[in-house]
Image (cartoon, rainbow, N blue to C red; front, side, top):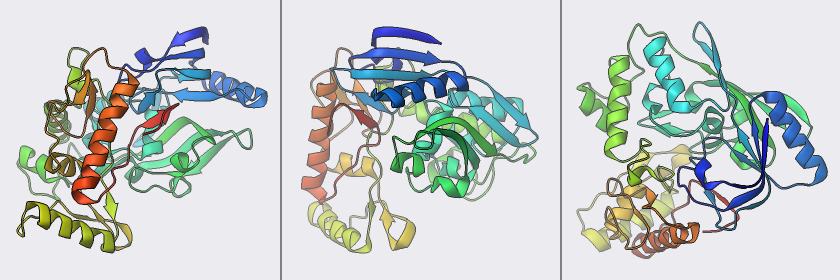
Length: 352
């Protein structure tokens, strides 16, 4: 376990933004994680958990407390049952399961930055796949009871980009995530996303070659600046900054009226069925149709030149610069279509 005082946090985030932590602890074992969390809680010390840093926006003043960087590594595989440490790099784990072991279940989540421990918190998903469909259990330290507990899939209460861990952000610290994968003899799970199916040359709902499915997703993400590359400022981001809005039937009807008033009676926005009769639409579509094109902005924080849903640090940006851009986009979308966009990254010491 390593401990530093007045330590910079920006290098631990994909935005490369944020001030220092009064104390930074890097833990490489579960015992070190639990010891650090328990000690901070008992002393009343503010605590910030950092994994891969791909979903964090830290204020320019930094964090006046203990930042715990989870750096545990490793995984075990028993047939198709996978148990991975929270600090394991997510996209590396996906590569291992596909290329080394030939297992399906998380192949369409290749290239997503961050750590394994963050995936159940956000119920990470992309290209028609979510971790909720393959997670069986999450092992976590419960700060309320001061015990290590095992939560079943049902206990996690997964929904779109949400979970028990997000609902109670100060309660659980994820230690391990367990998955049930599939040995599909070199085939992927059904391809559910139209863009992926087209690239793979298969019909939606049909499987594809497992390795080709992973490669296709990586290529699609790279084309949108969504695969980390230190030389490419389009990847100095948190990926999708806003979640796709989920609208009630009444809200969606009002939204359609706004769309047709603004874009014409024939305009049809993206619409996907969601829970309880609601409808999910596309945040990227809303941003683009509200007048925010790729590369929008004049300062050091701008929209990605490859994808309107990613806010990026072009080098030399501050967190204040980033949030000013986020507010500009959020407020512009609401003015155009009456829909409020919600940030996906966790905000530390700042508000949108």
